[in-house]
Structures are given as C-alpha cells and as structure tokens.
Length: 151
Image (cartoon, rainbow, N blue to C red; front, side, top):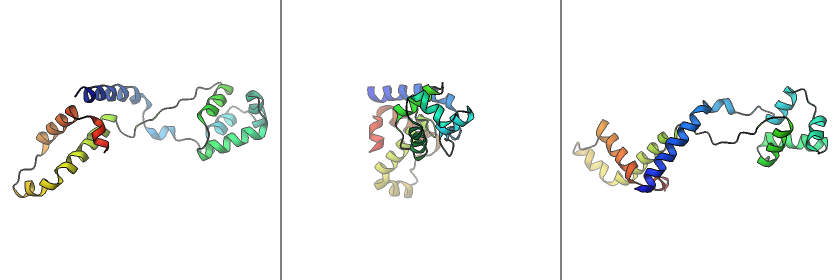
C-alpha cells in the first residue's frame, strides 16, 4: 500500500509539472528537424554552425539528416543547442494525464480479473455501475501496486 501511495504522489507531482507543456502536437519536430529549422531561422549556414561546433560542414549535414531520421544522440543535440544559444528540452509528454493512464490500466486489470465471473454477474444483474464502479476503481488503485496494472 505504501508503494501505491508513493506512486500516486509521484503521478500527481509529474502531472502538475507536465501540465505546463500543453498539447503534444506543439512539439512535433519540423519535417527537416529542429537543427536545420533553427539554423535556417537564425540565418546561419551549415558551415557557420560547423565552425561553432568545431567540426566540418559535412558533419552538420549528417547531424541534420540523423535528427530527421530520429537516430541522433541526445549529447549531439545538446552540443548543437549550446552552439546556437538554445536549451535542449528533453521530456516524455503524456498523451493524457498520468492519473488517467493509470485509471485506464486499472480498469483493464479489473476486466481481466473479473472476466470469468462477469458473464454470470451480468445474467444476475449484479454489475457495478456508475459511482459504485468508480469507488471500487479508486480503492483498487489505492491498494494495489501500479506495477500490477502493467502485467
């Protein structure tokens, strides 16, 4: 139960921090990548960026291509960001709140556990609905280690 409470506090804290990020769509990289987009927006040539990085111009082109393919290393992105007076922001931005994610996983967990008896409960009109279902879900989340929801 202590782990579940700690996980709940972590989720609440991260949800609060990540709420400032806003819609995930705003972080979709430009088609040709952030390096090239920022370099061009700053009016900087690949050769000029290469000098700032202490590499040759073909290396910058390779970095841009690597980023566009999604295979660039974070350390390289940090170096480029510093060279163009930017800060690299690295984060996982959830598609929905972490609390919503864990509630959905808990619902799936309950369904899997109850599947064998669900049919007979339905026939006897004993299914939990509305507030009763939400209360049971809240209790399960409080009392169960979240790692169980990912099995």
